[in-house]
Length: 73
Length: 382
Image 1 (cartoon, rainbow over the protein chains, first blue to last red):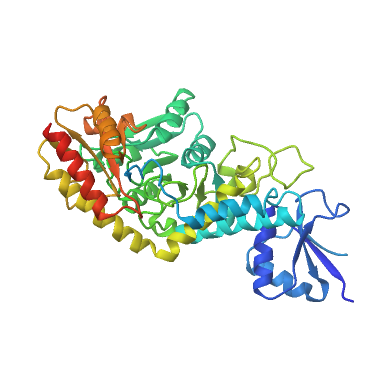
Image 2: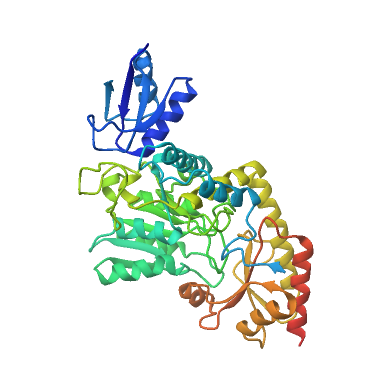
């Protein structure tokens, strides 16, 4: 089973922008409540497949989305 | 019933808009992006899609620079009260709506230096006076894209170019032009665009927004409404990121869903098609009124370009009496009086009586315009 990563954002709008960009690239992305042990900031985070984390980083960067942090679960 | 009050609010709304509102309430009713559960995410997705639709429609640089508000007035206040500080010079025109004039008069009392550039009785701005005002190095220029009384379309790109030469930011009030006239914030040089959802865009009341261009930094605008955003929840200070900085409090989810559907409705028909329909009907209306004995038309005359509204008076008749008769005896709904724009009426010379205003929309027909013209002719003859 592959590991999951969680992407945190500064605003919820960025979470939705990220979801859109990742899905367009046919990458797995699920919006979830931000795990409390990672942050108390933005209410929504993106759960992604850790195997594709480098692609995820690239896509977010290209889309101009500044992730607050990326963590392996 | 013949509805000619589109400049106040468009009606009826497209069925797609109504369906989107109902669906939001029935199916996706979570608080957009606050909680992270499936309904909150579904609602947040709809809000984000509306931001994207608005950004595309006005060629905004980034959906995150679309601030969703309750109306154009709210958006104008975010910009005016958020940017102007005591000692700043602000330039505007003599045909503005109270949505601009009232915040400016309030700011004037707090020490902002307000300069009002005159327009002539046809609603044309005096370019020489405008350039003189720009010599005062204003922080901001705020101009209506088209007055809700006069209907003349202002040369925004030219006025914005002149304002940028002196380093001023340009705020445009697009209440009467959004969804009616093509707007490209980047090519027209608009730094801040205030729009409403419920007029030309065909969305529901309680929606609108402020599009913020790249030339305006988040730090340039101080929020006058602060509150929860779903982000930075551990911090008691307002977040600095857009759109959250200027969107404290729960958004109008159902309205925003309707607004998104409305923008798509216009995009599917094509703004040019909608505009061609408006142009045909308003030209029929203006020519017909011009040919009616006793009727005086204000602003652009037949053949001149305008948004789909016209202000007129009938010799010897009080505008409120005409409004009442049109409604009661002919089933024609319009707005008479000062239209929340005393400055514009002073400019036209129609203060304090006001005018009768007719406006057409995407659902208005040639036959309805014909009936309205006959009714006006009949009232004028009596």
